[in-house]
Structure formats: structure tokens, C-alpha cells
Picture 1 (cartoon, rainbow, N blue to C red):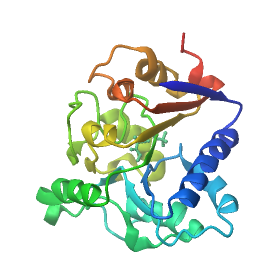
Picture 2: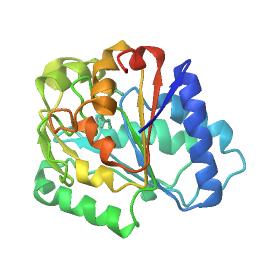
Picture 3: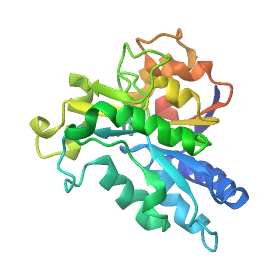
Length: 240
Ligand code: F6R
């Protein structure tokens, strides 16, 4: 992967937002791969000013993952997060922005349905990724197959504890999610993995320079012909 070390989150956001805005100008119905969590917010915050006067009405998008079993009204469903952080501020058409279906009633086909929707859209052009402290991308926790497709996974205790900050208590963090697989993610044409802070340094070093192993799912990016890693100094601190 190409590694770009930036001074600040804002610089990372500006860099990637420029690229996304250019993509949308060139291809107004481009398919974007959207991540949630804290990491991508500088990108989303930098986008509106770059999209002034740009037709975004046909932009399509697929989120990486969704919690299983949260009330659809809960502010932390990834559907609601994407609506709040991406769809509304950018003025996208919500019908063209997809998130996996975390409703337990339809969980058996949620993965296959999502794969079919991505395929029908022609695949993802640019996939934004964060990385978990344990090395996950999407919610592909250690042990995930590199060929995996969208499916239900169990969140690790580490991930539930990392994400407890978004909930009233750790007990409210769902146990399960529907996540794009590593195989799904690897089919996107360009991967952009972002990471900030020293808490991500081990995961970044493992993903970029460690052995390619399902013990560190982010290392799957080494198999991708066009992967860009954008990190601040702290997240880069354990790279050789
Ligand atoms: C989010 C996702 C996760 C996060 C990762 C880092 O859609 O799939 O892989 O990117 O857990 O989370 P943050 O950015 O909150 O540190």
C-alpha cells in the first residue's frame, strides 16, 4: 500500500475529500464505500465545501456495516449515522445510499441481499476504511476469511468496549453486526484506509507491514493493487 503521513486529521480529510469530489465531478453516479465510526468524519466534514455547485443527486453509496437488532430509531444505527454525517450534509439522495439490514427478522438473507445490491451497482469505486485497535476492517474481526462476503459476525469484546463511547453503557452495544466481508472490500477499485492516534499504531503497522494473516484482517489491504493508507504521525509511529 501507498502510505501518506499527514500533519492532522483535517489534512487527511482535505486530501481524501478532494479525491472524492473529483470522482463525483467525473462520474456523477459514482459508487462510494462509506465507513462509520470516528475516523472518517474529517473526510465527511471536508466534503460539503468541495461539492458546491456539483451535482450529487446521482451519487450512490454502500456502508461497510450495521449493528444487528438496534431499534431503527436509535441514533447509533449506522443507517442513522450515515444519514446524519453524510446524506444530509452533502444533500445526497437517501434512496441511493445503502446500509446492510440489521433487522433480526431478515438477518438470514441480509448478507446475500447486500452483496447483490453492490454487484447490481457495478461495485464500489472508492472504499473508505477505518481500522479497529484489534486490526479489523469493516467488522471483520480477527479470524475472518479473506474470501468472506457480507454476513453476520459477532463483535469482539475489544470492539464492543471501543464502541461503548457511542452508547449509554457497554451493555447497550449490540453483540452482532452485518458486515461486508474482506472479499467484498477487496473488490472495491480503490481502498483508502485512514487511521489517527497512537492507539491505532500497532494495527496500522500490522496491516501495512506485517504478515498477511487473518489474525490481523487489515493486512488484507496488502493483497489489493490500489490501496492508500492515510495516517497521522502517531498512527504511523510503529511503521518501519
Ligand atoms: C466502521 C467500521 C470499523 C471502524 C473501526 C474504527 O464502519 O467498519 O471498522 O472503522 O472500528 O473505528 P473508529 O473510527 O471509531 O476508531
